[in-house]
Image (cartoon, rainbow, N blue to C red; front, side):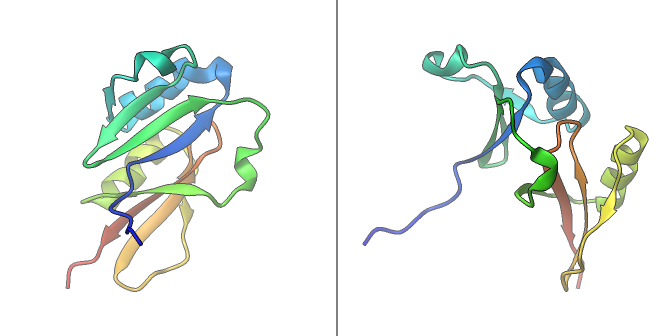
Length: 124
């Protein structure tokens, strides 16, 4: 039996007509770095980003009820308070998450309905 090594990428989707706004949110507000998509996938639209060793793929998809799912991406950050303030100032509604011992965290939804978690390990 072989073992899994790591997570290669996570994919979220945004409505087809909102790709430009998704670029503003993920590349602009969150500051993720765009990486090239393979030529074989470019015609599908969307874009890929790199964050540490993991990629986030932002793809285009219509007809999805994003606000009804608990599926999400959790971003580990160094200063959770900074991100809380930045996202609130950008007009996003910040929600408190159920506490997890040893972590400070909150969640929000991106402008397209994808659930996002921001989590910081507490210092011992």
